[in-house]
Image (cartoon, rainbow, N blue to C red; front, side, top):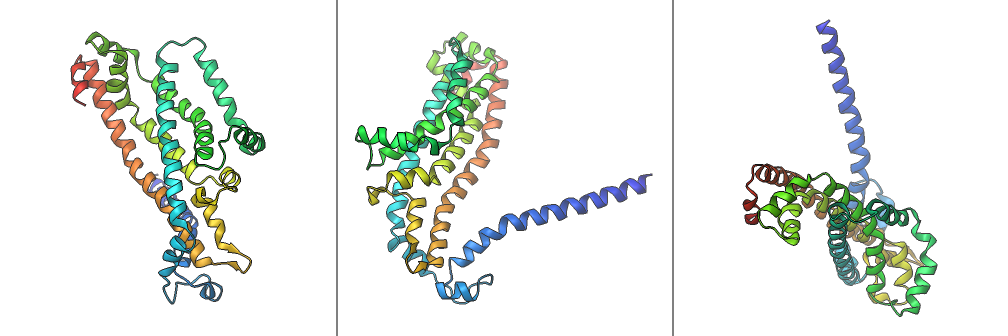
Length: 295
């Protein structure tokens, strides 16, 4: 019986590793294809489509940055995404805490009303939204991107924060209040350290959603090329003569790199936030709420 079970476990491992290997190839191949293509000339791209670059064209990145104006678009994306992520995170934290811990009447109904807007396809409101912002003279600038991005991301982000706050026992806040914490001190010194994983989650989701958004950015930046973001800027590589594939994929690599860096950084922050939260909970439950202020 034991030999039979050992044989089954062995085949299960082989199957698991096989599936994992296939999945890795499927996920990694497009990334590697994009990376190697970014070092090929347009001529070599058609001659040597799937092979390694024979003549490395490092200048593809320089041309994409300067000639393709990705440097300007990169700065626009950083400003638009940075401001929208920061505002979304702050508003979601305050709103989620209020709905979860301040005993607001009909809090769940308010949250449900916010979430309804998340189920409305963005494309369904683009015309009316652009018309409204045009009448308010908000088009033609970065604010025409920042405000909608904030509005679209807040409901889901606030929902995540609210759900996370609701898992934290009321006794933790009460312990801090007994030791003299004000409501703001309880929020900043007790609650925030416990919701670091949730904060990291909404930052990652919001950053990815705003950094790579194309449809609304393409509409609202049509009147002013100077405020184009990176996804819109990549369309510049499509000309009447075709696509400069080397420069185009170099641009895609530059767009993708910040996403990988942000995700890689906050991935470790999940674990750090969870560990800090557990330690803080133990300290408060033992009555050492004064230690909160030193965190």
